[in-house]
Every structure is written in structure tokens, then in C-alpha cells.
Amino acid sequence: MTLKNTDMKNRRPKTLALFALALLVVVVACKNDDEQPISNALRILKANVNETNLKDNPTGIDTNISLEVISSHSLNTSAFESALSISSSSGEMSKSFSYTNSNSIVTITNTAELDYETEYTISLPAGAYGEDGNELAESISYTFTVKEFVPPNVTLSTDMSAISEAGGVATVTATMSEPVNALVTVELGFSGAATTLTDYIASGTSITIPAGQSSGNITLTAVDDVEVEGLEDVIVSVENVTNAIEATEQEVSFRIEDNDAGGRGLIINEVLFDPPSGSAGDANGDGSRSASEDEFIEFINDSDVEIDLSGFNLYDEDQIGSLTPRHTFANGTIIPAHGVYVLFGGGTPSGDFGGAMVGVSTTGNMNLNNAGDKIYLHDANGNEYLTFDTAVEGAGLDFGSDQSITRSPDITGDYTMHTVANAALTFTPGTMIDGSAFDMSGGNSGQGLIINEVLFDPASGSAGDANGDGTRSASEDEFIEFYNDSNSEIDLSGFTLYDEDQIGSLTPRHTFPNGTVIPAHGVYVLFGGGTPAGDFGNAQVAVSTSGNMNLNNSGDKIYLHDANGNEYLTFDTAVEGTGLDFGADQSITRSPDITGPYMLHTAANTALAFSPGKKADGSNF
Image 1 (cartoon, one colour):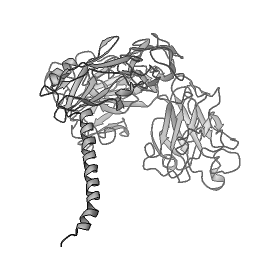
Image 2 (tube, rainbow, N blue to C red):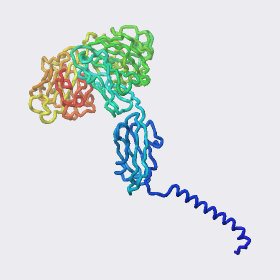
Image 3 (cartoon, rainbow, N blue to C red):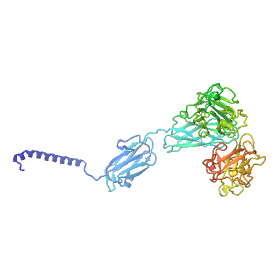
Image 4 (cartoon, rainbow, N blue to C red):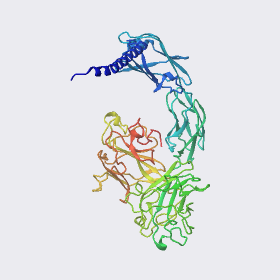
């Protein structure tokens, strides 16, 4: 196509205008390049401390920092680290470096906590810090200020609600809301019925928490004496704090349980969850049967000292979460030694309760659930004191069968249905299973004869010489430690001992000779054989008449029959020793002694594998 001259004339002005515009853009671009010339100099593109831009001179920075610097070039790390300074009036900050992105990004952290309320200056003078010699043309300086010191809050706690007088140990711990870079000292005060040095020894009168740590502790160890003292409380409180604060008053407490009183302290002997229908269910004797008011719990003080329940609270499983008590024991509620206390759900109890103390719940309803429940008794300080769980103590029993659950025999026996213990009665609040009054003189104190320790598997070599006769024997060094947990002597004359292999044929492994009498709170150790020699505390010591008790490491059952052939006591590895390893080169022992559950001896005391005639800690009973 051919353009006419007239068309060319019309287009020329437009073309000239476009050319002029393009020329202007080039000129402007050149002018900008003159202001920011292309350079190979090192530049700091970004610098943050704890994600805050350092150009803003930030304040309130934590005592631990993460400083991020991004440079325009890869860094010569040794040159950069030598030149960079982070300092305060106290001196240079100790620091560590890490690099990413071909050493163009560096992260700097402090290796010692920074000082509170202190300004730190970051300085980097001009110099060659690039990997290829690239230079920082001008020096750089930033500042940041560490936050002010806010003292952390201190709280107290203890790992025990009760310890045995027999060397029991409680740990009291002071914990801070956050660690600080200063030593914290928590000075303590001690009060309560128990007294220092006489009843317990504290490892210190203050708790120190080193700088940078969040907790510290002391231990309080009970002193074993011969005085009958009952339960004594220890109260530990904060008196003064250095470098921290006590935001709310801190106080913890625990009990020291006397081991000189005999028995087990307060126990639940009988519970009625389901009063029978009609007049047969009028357990409180007020002339009216009530599903709630005729429920009752029978407590027995199985000790030689009185127990003060003032301010104690009773809960069921529904109310324990909210700590809303079903009953609060009034001030002055004291159960005498070997005394009985019956708590009814409500009503106006009337009748013969065998001399027992009787009360009704302060809410008028203990709400014991026939389908399963748990009873909690807390002391006046809110510590758990006693529980009864239908799934544990009452395992396999029917709590909705129009009768109570009771120990059989009273006080020392396992729980069973009342009509199993006595077919003629469905409940006996305040009295024994047969309806007779309890002997409150102390004749029923304790559990009677118990097995406290058994060695099924003597260790190999001299370590297994339990009877101390100089020779280790797999059969002769086996032993059973019996304890008379009562206030009366127990005569074992003519009693016979069997293991599971021999019970069928009634061939005894041991027959106790005439005159074998264990005194009140006495100890008797029966070895498989040998010639026992050594320190067995104050225990009586004997060897089996057959020379071999044949205790089976993989599982066995011990039977003790009285002189008339009646079963008197048993120990079943599948029941009392469930979950334990009887072939572990050590004994099985109660912990705490007498009243506690069975466990491996080294779990009770790591220093000893057995302690025939003595407590788990090696001291005398």
C-alpha cells in the first residue's frame, strides 16, 4: 500500500511526540541511576531483635534474644564475628552465631541471660566483611533495652498427705512462675501439732532456687519414737521471699501417722448402700424406712489413740469434683481409741447401736449409689484421709441387694455381703456382725497376725544368705516374716504351714511347736532351714520342721491352719502379690511396714534386698 504525502504530514507530529517522551524516560532513568549507583558494597538490608526492627530502638525486650541480620552479600564469618559488638554498661554480651542462605543471613543469640532494665548497643564499624572482600561503607549502630524485672510468683506444694512416723519422708517444693537470672530464697515457717527435731527433721529452714531454675525443695523426715501420739500435722508456710514474690499466702500440710498406736487408724467397717424395702430397711430405727436417711457408714478407730474428725468432710463420687461435701463433721467430733462412729444419711436415729457414737449427715443425704460409688473422707486441711471404692474394696459385691457390705471378721476381714457373714441379719450399725457390741477396750486392735515380708527367691552367692549362716541356699534362705498386729499375744502352738503343692495332702511344710507365742506387736521369722545367725531385730526366729518351705518363685500360695485344722491366714501371689515378680532376687514386703501394700523390697528401700525381722529400712520394729 502506498501512503500519500498528506498522510505522512499528518503522522509526523505524532511520531515526534513519541520520540520526545521516550527520550524523557531515558533521561529520568539515568538521573535515578546517578542517585543510587550500582555498587558491589556490603549493605545491611534488615536487622531485627526478637522479630522487632532495630531501627526503632525497641524496649521491653526479653532477657533472651534472637538477633537476625540480613546482608546484601555472603559474609566472611570470622571477620564479621570479630567486628560485631553487643554490649552494655556491664560489658560485652556472650553470644553464638548461626548462618543460612550462603552466609548472608546470620542469627545471633545470647549464651547468658541478659540484665533486666539495661540498654544494649549493637555496633559494627565500617570494614570489609563480605566473603569476596565487600566493604561496609559506613558504621552501623543500634540499641535495644531489656524489659524491667517483674518478680516471679512462688507457690508451695508437697508430695505427701501423710507419712509414717517410721522414717517417712515428705518433700516440700517451692516453684516459681518463671525462672530468673538471680538466686531466689524462700524462707519457711513450721507449725502444727508436730514439732521440729522431736517429731521430724527438716533438711533446711529455707528453699534456694538457683538462677535460671524454676524450683527447689527441702525434705522433712519423721522421727521414730516410742510415744503414743496419734496423728500429728505439720504445717509449712512461706515467711519471706528474696528476688520473687508470694502473690497469695502459701501453706502446705501433711500428717505424721504414729506407729506406736497399734492398728490401722480410722477404717470403714460396714456400709449400707441399699436399705431394704418396708420396715426391714429402717436401719436408723426412727420408725420410718427411707432410701436416703437409712443409708449408713460405720467407722471404727482401730488404734490406741483418739481420732479428731473436727472439720473433716465426706464426699461421694458425684460431689468430689465440686468439693461440695455430703457431710461435714462438727467441731469436737472425736472417736476414742477403738471407738465406733455411725453416720446415717438422715432421720432421727433411735435404738441400740452398741455404744457407738451416732450422727446424721449435715445435708440429709449421703447419696450412696447402689450401682457403684466412691466415698471420700478429707481432713480439715482438705487432704484425702480415707476412701472406700465399690470397684476396689467391694469388687464383685452387689451393693443393691437390700443389705450392707461388712468386713468379716469385723475390723480385720475382707468385705462381704452381710448375710454371707451372718444369715440372720442384713445390717448391724454400731455393732459387730453377730449384733454384739464391739470391745472398745482395745482387744480388737489391729489386723491380728499378718505376713509382712516373704522371700521366695534368695539371690545367688553371698548376697542371698538371708539367714546369715554363711551359706546361700535356695531353700534354707527362704523366709516368711509374721507380725502380730494386735494388743494381745497370739499362740501358734500346733499351727501348720502349707504351700500350694502340699495343701491337697495336708502334709505341712512346718508345724509350730507348743509354746510358740508371738507377743503383742511382736515379730516371728520362719526360715526354710539352716542355722540362722545375725541381727534379726527383736524377732523370734525359727526354721521349718521339714527343712524346706518350697516357695515357688513363679507363683505359690501359703496356707496357715490353726491347731484345729481351720484356715487361719493365707498369702496368694496371684492376689496379695498381683503384678509382682517373685523371682527377682529379693523379698516381697509391705510398704509401709504392717499397713502398706506389698511391693518389691528394693522399691521400698533401694539399699536392701530383704530385711527379716526388721522393717524395710533395716530398723527394728
